[in-house]
Image (cartoon, rainbow, N blue to C red; front, side, top):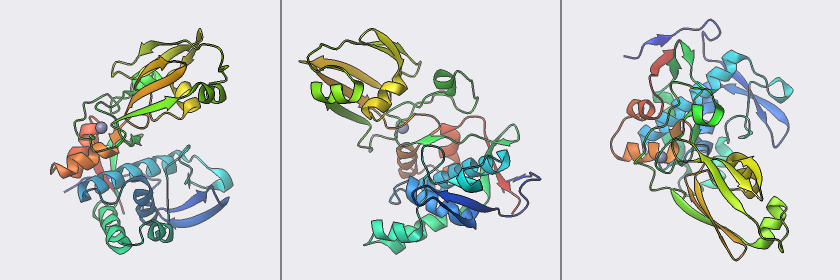
Length: 286
Ligand SMILES: [Zn+2]
């Protein structure tokens, strides 16, 4: 039996306004219906049911926190489908278009993951947590302290031995001198110098020096479109070779890790409690 989480702001299933960034318009839909579209967009539906349930609880917690905070998106929306500021969403039609051969089977699997966790969220100190998640950690998640300077007790670095199935567990990116010229404004004739100057405790790069100039690894990652900030770098005849681990910021739930844990017969609560520490799993009152 899951205990109740009571908030005066949510006494029944919320109807949310969702901003569709590509169309610059708002749609209204029930929270649980929105969550099916979010799970569909955020996690491969072929993952085990317990991974999909863990994803549904993350997405619900993330959404509920935004609703309670009263943060607003363009056109007064509660939430947005823009992944840079919120979480992804696709409607059933778009999902069917992307999965023409087995749409019905996959969609009902997603709906079931949402229904069986209806109203369930993660709470820390009586507040819905900031349920960050990412594709693939590459072996170890990241702590909030190392990336933001703020210690968040439920966002600490943990080992993950479950995300090897991701093609981004380890990957390599190669940039020619011309690529580098376009992406980081170096001259193809000038030699570039690169030095990693600090790493987080978990192993991701925090700061580096590019031609003597210090910058955040995250800035460098964005400039080059790298999958994460966990890399080793080498230069070969003016080309840059990046050996990367993981995909995404590394905070909170590792989605491929959740897939691996589900395959190893862990249930969704065990998955969530692995990636988020000291949390309670509670149910909203609807
Ligand atoms: Zn992982």
